Image 1 (cartoon, rainbow, N blue to C red):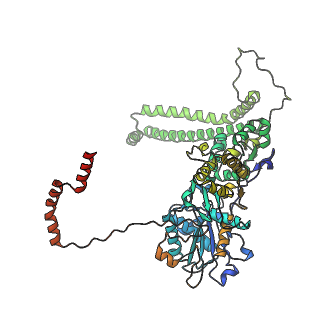
Image 2: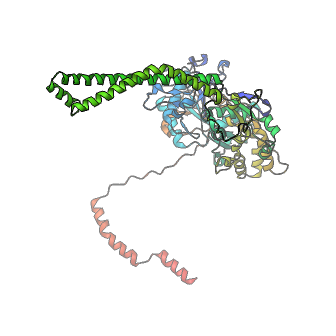
Image 3: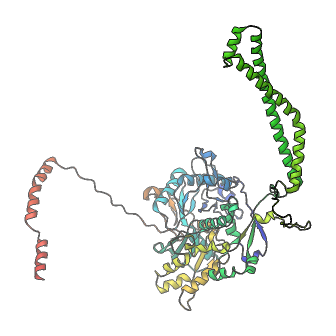
Length: 625
């Protein structure tokens, strides 16, 4: 994300990147000879990253990076589904996009299966019916047991993988960066992780996640992008279609920043000089020529003359058609009148009935009217040419005088309206500036919802308030150990000024002269994958039936169930769910059942008449007192 000093009085353009389909890679050399090379999948709610955990330098980074979305229209088959980078532009298909996530938890396992198919196919795995490589998969902090059970069932039953290891993305990034700094084990600290849908506070005590005190804040990158889209659409209602969610995400990533002091920064934006210096002008695509904006008077006159000619041609065709119809009807009526003159009375009366006429006088009246109409029509056709030329000339004269305006009443004096000088230059309309978005205070207001969710109407604590609440649950000694290693990770932590803001908030939060240290991940969006890869290289699943720490074998899955989790330094904490099983009822002898039924009324009466010893004791104690 860009800093504030990158753009001073400059105009920026949206990149609108178009993704290209991922190629199908070949298996690396280290994976062809052995099947123990793990596949590392960072299953993020914004992006999925997948690659191999091998020591070779040619695959030192994730080979696949794509958006965690699928587009499939209603009724389409699985083969017609578009996954990730197969979708070049998300905006036309925004209404079709589906994700496997509800916030940060996987709930749609049909889409998740499509994502796995895409990953395994493009990584070059072509084995029939199974994936013969261990899988390292990231999951949400404090992931529900049901979601893990469904994920294990999908991988073990559908893909028949040999081993699975689950870990939290923020913890992988935490241990990866601590290992690079050669910090002493076990690590203690507190992680501030913010992604696309949620943000988390993850305390780590002596190398293990303290799941009891983990907290989630339902504000992250997607809420900031939606908030920015609403603000700009209200500000520029004429460009609603151009203010897309993808462009808002680009604005957040490259043009937004976190203010160290939010209210003080807003006061700076009140200054016009500061506004002109810091505002980012985002140029929207546009066409240079706007209809009617650059048309001269001569062109308008020519267009109106053409319209008049077309209208005259249409009227002339209609008159010709009307004249032909009248002529045909007149010829028919004259033929009927000739029958009367020839003395063919029977045929004459039949023709009158067909014409719906009663007498010869009515027939003669129609003939006279049609003769007049035909004569007038012929006269109009003869005069059309001269009249058309006259009307065009009169129209051109009218437009020259006032461009079609209404004449001024003679009651007003002629010098009421001052004459415009011919050398007065009219201001030119800047069409490019009309298609610019001036992004000012929105650059800091939208990321601020991470610290103040109330800006969007969310009734919950911000990130630092939640951190203060979590720290208050520990002893002062534990608090000192936690704040000595405050770690920031996640794609939504890449704003410029994020580290300084957290340090400022901690300085106001912690006691006087207390010490704390805030560090940022080297690559906040990618360190989770690198951490999972390094962990997999250090803890390869054992052979000959032995399983290393953190791996779940197929045998353990069948014995302990899909919700089982093998804990390790970057995993969640396994909290088994104990369900009491009902004891099966024993078969009852019919004679014993009759005896018990017969004795039931007597027992009831006896218990009602004779109080229990406990009741008597209680009553006596009450009287004594």
